[in-house]
Image (tube, rainbow, N blue to C red; front, side):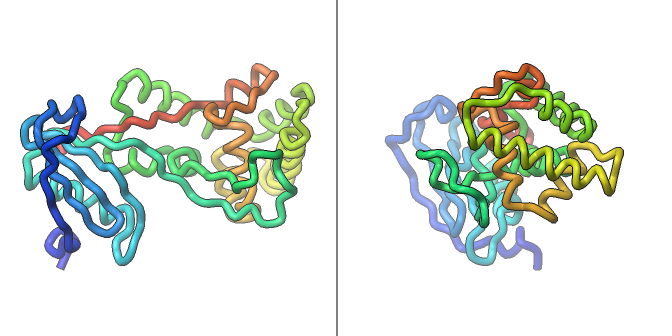
Length: 243
């Protein structure tokens, strides 16, 4: 029996005071099960995933399949969500980060999967940025970064002006160290190759690199123009149309 045939047990309730532009101010229905809170408007035929996480017997992928089933059942035209998917990083053995950064960095699942495979996790399941221009910019970034020469990136870091932030300098030094390590094995390695290799060999640093070198949301300024061009603010408001 498939997951569609054996949907997880869930509860429903109608919220008559829900206020959202996409619902048109009309009552909405909540569907809740382990790991998933889904809300939809019969009036606008739109749905929104409010929360999704692997829990119990159901993976995130299975829960998205369940959302597709619900969307077809209620004849929805689109499903929206805010992408906050991440992978926790234990960062074992790392030096103490700056004050205020006591929590281990969280690795964006979208960024990680996009660098490894060319598609983010939600993107793989048909969700794209609501703004077409934002999606096009994200796609250009993914294609450009994945194909970048790791050797060229290593030399760019070496040429960059030292930061006033000691932790930033430490991260750069580790990037150069690990890039050189892979280049000894694979002289033509791309950045995509590097991310995959890092996950196998030094996984605790993948989140650190993404946080300090590639995310535009961390607020850690890069003086070097080349290094700034590596950063991106990932699309967060996603939509799947024609479900």
